[in-house]
Amino acid sequence: MSFADLGLSDELLQAITAKGYDTPTPIQAQAIPSVLMMRDLIAIAQTGTGKTASFVLPMIDILAHGRRRAMMPRSLILEPTRELAAQVAENFEAYGKNHDLKMALLIGGVQMGDQVKALNEGVDVLIATPGRLMDLFERGKILLTGCDLLVIDEADRMLDMGFIPDIETICSKLPASRQTLLFSATMPPPIKKLADKFLSNPKSIEVARPASNNTNIAQHKVLVDSRKKREALRYLLQNDNVSTAMIFANRKTTVRELNKSLQRHGFQSGEIHGDMDQSARIAELDRFKDGKINILVCSDVAARGLDIKGVSHVFNFDTPWHPDDYVHRIGRTGRAGATGRAFTLVGKEDLEAIENVEKLTGGAIPLYKIEAEAAEERPARESRPRREERAPREERSEKPRRERAPKADKAEATDKAPRAAREERAPREDRAPRAEPRAESRPRRSEPSEPPSKPGEWNGPVPGFPGISAL
Ligand code: AMP
Image (cartoon, rainbow, N blue to C red; front, top):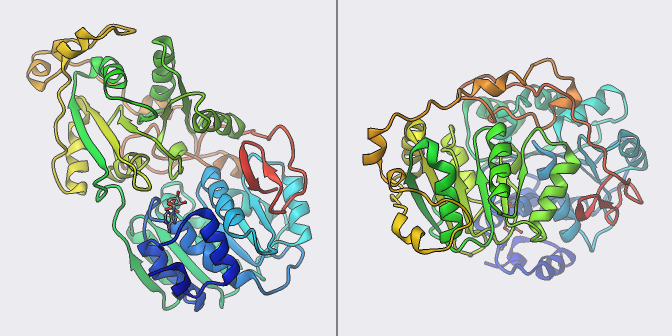
């Protein structure tokens, strides 16, 4: 099967070839013909499957004909985070280069005046996070009655972030006859309910989880005394041919402290988490993408869905509380046919979580023992892991320090954040499983340093996202 078999236009086929793709991924092969036939769609697929192109490509051909009108976007894509919105915008830019379409990106942290101006000029594709879109809608700056195509991307993450009421409101403002495409990695009951309510006779597609089925990723768990996790991590960073690594931690405070500690030990590391403002996050990501640092310590929400090429290693400093996050985390490596390695450090406090991960991924993750002897033979920049952190046998003889409870960081949160601040709130960060979604405590101020030259056009760069056009 080739892209030419899917019913896409020649202009689009040229753009796909220019991007270097010749074979559609399974989700693209299944979704594109149905979307072109204007059918609603439910796709159970996660990032890494090529799902973005499965809606971006047919949308470009659908929107190729038609007229833009002021304040009335012709299509709308909802994304849970600014980074994902920017990534979708990048896709539109690459695939839409042979089309005369205007796109606008409505995300928090970007000046509203420019966004309003672009909306007034008319846009074909509006890519938005729900919070910012609702803000503009409530201010009467946008009309959704001309929006005939809606994409709800990462619906389960929207649920986690408390965006479902906003999405319901948004859906009710769009024409009832619109086409709706819903993408979600999982289908929990509230998402099923949303789909039943707002989609009509949808085609359903489910594609395999890329990460858990991805044999390109060698997965390991390392049993370690909780107090020795940093040492174990440093040992692995120095001894496992790490070229680029993403390190995940469950709490923002851990992300910050771990990054500081790695830097103190001479590693070229940076951090991204939900407490950083937009420009700082983008700057840090760019440093990582440009190779100025080769280690990025991340929280789940900040790193969700980011498509960064060539990550050789993923480390789980903590086992994620939600097993789905494990799949998302390790899926940062082993992308696009490359091989990758994923290590999960398992302290006593992680034992229940790792069991849940193994249930989800369908088998025990192979145990990896750190060879302290090997470490001692190498010149190291810091103290090496000692024998007692290698195996559970020694661990049992020690009383591990109690991990700080997730609620330590919860004090930073409140549900009373204004709407603007609800963009990117991080429900899974810094809290134990099953807690209620919450907003972060303070509004995020994150104006980019310079406004793009021509709002709303394909060729206006977004600061920090080279090559993305936006407002
Ligand atoms: P996504 O699931 O949309 O996040 O895409 C994951 C990665 O797959 C991105 O780097 C895409 O550029 C890439 N990709 C998308 N479609 C294809 C394709 N047909 N062949 C190879 N790679 C693709």
